[in-house]
Length: 165
Image (cartoon, one colour):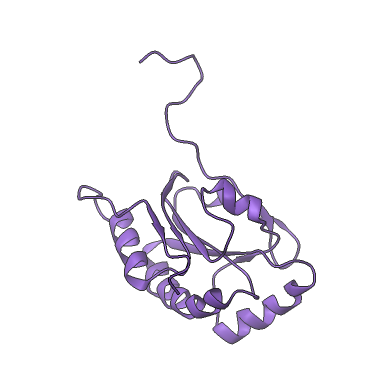
């Protein structure tokens, strides 16, 4: 196949720019070179509350292997006041980003509901997505594959659990 000069044949890299708790701009591109687990959630989301403790455990297990977990909250100005309470209550040590929207979630090829989780390789490309509450084994399968030699069969690229809570 012939391609135009300057046009890459690689899949597009994931792009997300939000703010951290101090209001500073944060970019997904700052994490190139690392495997990233990006979880979209909100304080008003029941399944999100259910999965956060497991994400905290998984982050603790995989952070020493270079995996970065990021929580991107869809809370609006009114409900965002509850985010710091969530961080304390659930012992969240990974970065929490503010200001995500349903448009951001849709750009990652996910639905309109949260929670949603995206797995990015070190080049920033989306390797897998889970729409709805993620299972522990789904995280382990995807991270172990991403951190391994990637020679075996890749985990399912898109899993949907919405309505299965």
